[in-house]
Length: 376
Ligand SMILES: *Cc1c(COP(=O)(O)O)cnc(C)c1O
Image 1 (spheres, rainbow, N blue to C red):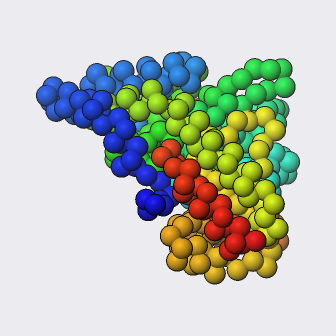
Image 2: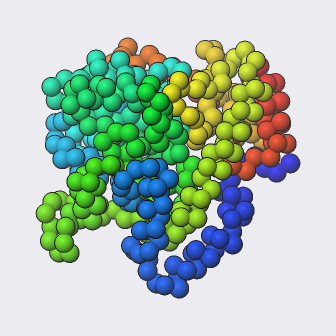
Image 3: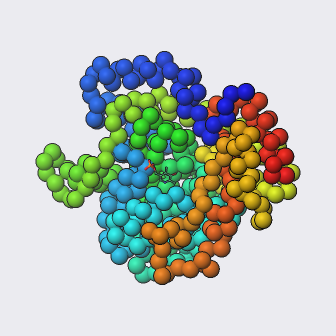
């Protein structure tokens, strides 16, 4: 049996190698490396895929969050609400801009930000909510958009792990992750569901004025060349990455389906585990399974489980071991551990299994059998 990987970027590349190689060669032959036709083509194709008016590319998913917050003119001291149980980029960017991150609890089943916790955290200084669509399914956007409307807040959706996922509103309207709030952001980090072969990111919006500002901020605050209207930054998706992404975008639905198939297998094969719970599907979202994350029962020795699985050739990861409020950089007298029992428990009990687009059935059977033996 082939070695089991958390992600198999080489296997995925091999299946589309001629197309990718040709796209890269074309960029080399034209000598257009920054900006260029592939950036425009990919942005337009992604906008069409997402059914959103504007896609503004940038250098990575963290920059996408930063440029979005700068473009919205958030000011030092403004409070921005986000999830305690998440990847650090979200809180990092808020703090870097001297805004105040306000961490709130998540839902124990979906791992996504809890709308009732958002309401409790709102103060007169609150300006924005940043829901993170964690592991591949959307946060409760209907509730979040209702809160945002009532309190006049921006919504910046971090869709770095959920590109392609659909959220369905109670009136039947269906929208892609990242196209619901004021602005959505994503990352094209290689192991993301739509990944390039380096760094990349993008922002999405239906607001024409905001789209112009996003572009301007990502380009040093220039409106016209050498005319600087605002302080911006330098955040570009290069032409080579865009050319690669333009090829891979055609396969995104196939990639999502492959991940969903792995998840469906795990769901069934691991349903009767006594010491672990398989992922719960959110009520109104499809799940594109950036991660397939088990929650281990209290008292299970996760480190021992991981070691035994690793010894048997099965890699696992812990996304994320420690919630943000427990991180030195984001600790605040505002919080104590008592405020975040769910985030803390998740940090201690989550375990992500190998999931990617290239998993042979033989590997899945072996993983399911071994996990059933090891975790029980
Ligand atoms: C990957 C990721 C980011 C950051 O993306 P980079 O391209 O690595 O900067 C931000 N938020 C979430 C939820 C992510 O998973």
